[in-house]
Amino acid sequence: MKSAAFVSESIEELKHNIAKHTEDGFQPTIAICFSSICQDMSKVGPVFSDFGIPVMGCSTAGEICNDDFIDRSLVSMLLDIKQEQFQLFTGENDEKRSTYQIAFDLGKEAISFCRNPALIILSAGMQVVAEDLLRGVQDAVGRPLPLYGGMAGDDANWVQTFAFNNDKVIDHGMMALILDGDYLEVKGLATSGWEPIGLENTITKGCGNTIYTINDEPALDVFIRYFGTFDNTMVKGEDVSSLSAQYPLQILREGGSEPILRSPIIGNDQERSLTLAGYIKEGERFRFSLSPGLEVIEKTVENFQVFQKQDAVESDALILFSCKGRHAALGPMMEDEVSGIHQPWGNTPMIGFLCYGEFGNTELGACEFYNETCSLVSIKEK
Image (tube, rainbow, N blue to C red):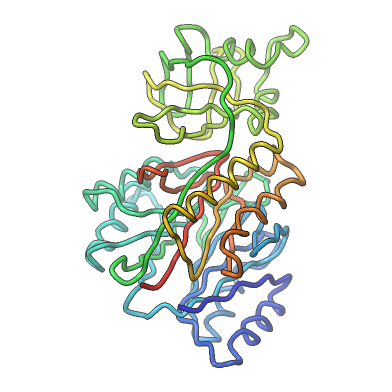
C-alpha cells in the first residue's frame, strides 16, 4: 500500500498538493485530512471530490505531519487501499439519535462489512460523551476490536468542533473509517509518559465526570494539599483549569495496564469537588501526576520505540492523535516529541492532530478514552 502525507496552508495549496502527489500515476482511493478551523472546511471535501477521492477529516487544535508540528494548516494523507477493504461511516447526533445509538450503528455496520474490523473514529461536538461512544461500538460488536481516533478540536477555543467528508461538515456526531483486518494490519498504542506522585487514592464519591470525595475527604481539598493552597485562598475553578494540563489523575487499571489519564478542568469551591475531562467510577483508584518535563517526552518516545521493535510493527501509514493538553504542558518541546515518535518508522508517512481526548489501545489490548495521551495507529497491507 502506498501513502503520501503533506501540509497545505490554503485551499488552493491543497489542490496543488493533491495534483502534485498524483501526477506520477499514484491513484489514491481514500484520504484523511485534519484542518484548523481557520481554514474553510466546507471547501475541503469538494476539493477531494474534484480528484475523485473519498475523504474524512475533522477540525483540530494543532496539526502534525511527519516530523513537524504545525498550526493553522491542513494536513492530508492519501492512501491507495483497495476499495473493497474499507468503508466510510458518517453519523450525526440529533434529538432521536444519541452518541451511544450512532456508535452502536457504527459497530453493527463494521461487523456486517467484514469479520475482523478495525476502526478509526473522528468525533465532533463539545457535548459528545466519549465513554458512550466506546460503549456503543463494543455493545454492537460484542467483543474487543482495534479502535483508534480522537475528539476534534477548535484551536483551543473550546466552543465548537467539526468533522467532515466530501459532502458535509457536521458539528455533532462522528466520521469513521472501517478497515478490513483480514487484509490490513492495524496496530497501535496509547501512552502518556507521565510519572505518578504520592500514594494511591480512592474515589469514594463521584458521578459522571465529577469527583466529590477522595478517600472520604472533599476532592478539591485533597487536590490542594498536593499542589498548593494558592496563597491560602479558596481555590476557584479557573485555578484548577490552569493546572489541568500539569497534574492529570492516573486512573489505575488491573493487570498492569498503563493508567488512564483524566485532566481536572473545574474546581467547585462550594461543593469542594473536581470535574474531569472524562468519566470516572466510584471505587476507582488513582495517583496524581508530577509536573511534566523532558522525561515525559523521553518515556513516551521510548514506549513507542519498544512497541515498534517488540511487535515488529512495520507500517505503510501512521496516524497520531495527541492531546491538546500535552501541548499546554510541554510547550515548545512538543516538536521534539512528534519528531521522536516518528523517528523509529523512518520515512513512513505520518499525519496527526492535537485533539480534545484520544481513543486507543493499551499495551494489553484494551480500548480506552484518554486525556493527556498520545495514541498512535499503524496501517499496513498484509
